[in-house]
Length: 53
Image (cartoon, rainbow, N blue to C red):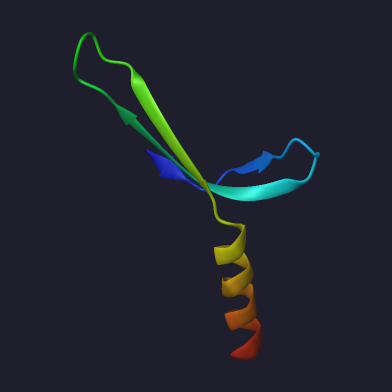
Protein backbone atom coordinates (compact mmCIF):
# COMPACT_ATOMS: atom_id res chain seq x y z
CA UNK A 1 0.00 0.00 0.00
CA UNK A 2 1.33 3.45 -0.82
CA UNK A 3 0.15 6.97 -1.38
CA UNK A 4 0.68 10.70 -0.85
CA UNK A 5 -0.95 11.82 2.40
CA UNK A 6 -0.42 15.24 3.97
CA UNK A 7 1.31 15.49 7.34
CA UNK A 8 2.04 18.23 9.86
CA UNK A 9 5.48 19.37 11.02
CA UNK A 10 6.27 20.26 14.64
CA UNK A 11 5.90 23.93 13.72
CA UNK A 12 2.35 23.27 12.51
CA UNK A 13 3.00 23.63 8.78
CA UNK A 14 1.46 21.04 6.48
CA UNK A 15 3.51 19.15 3.88
CA UNK A 16 3.06 16.32 1.35
CA UNK A 17 4.76 13.01 1.96
CA UNK A 18 5.16 9.69 0.20
CA UNK A 19 4.06 6.81 2.45
CA UNK A 20 4.61 3.12 1.82
CA UNK A 21 3.29 0.43 4.18
CA UNK A 22 4.41 -3.19 3.81
CA UNK A 23 3.24 -6.27 5.70
CA UNK A 24 6.08 -8.33 7.16
CA UNK A 25 5.83 -12.13 7.01
CA UNK A 26 8.37 -13.06 9.71
CA UNK A 27 7.43 -13.83 13.34
CA UNK A 28 3.69 -13.32 13.20
CA UNK A 29 3.68 -10.44 10.78
CA UNK A 30 3.32 -6.79 11.51
CA UNK A 31 3.70 -3.76 9.31
CA UNK A 32 6.53 -1.43 8.37
CA UNK A 33 5.83 2.11 7.23
CA UNK A 34 8.33 4.30 5.40
CA UNK A 35 7.66 7.94 4.62
CA UNK A 36 9.50 10.70 2.80
CA UNK A 37 8.92 14.44 2.59
CA UNK A 38 8.15 15.18 -1.07
CA UNK A 39 7.71 18.96 -0.82
CA UNK A 40 10.52 19.68 -3.31
CA UNK A 41 9.16 17.17 -5.81
CA UNK A 42 5.69 18.73 -5.64
CA UNK A 43 7.17 22.22 -6.08
CA UNK A 44 9.11 21.04 -9.15
CA UNK A 45 5.99 19.43 -10.60
CA UNK A 46 4.02 22.63 -10.12
CA UNK A 47 6.79 24.68 -11.77
CA UNK A 48 6.93 22.31 -14.76
CA UNK A 49 3.16 22.44 -15.16
CA UNK A 50 3.22 26.24 -15.01
CA UNK A 51 6.03 26.59 -17.58
CA UNK A 52 4.42 24.21 -20.08
CA UNK A 53 1.17 26.18 -20.24
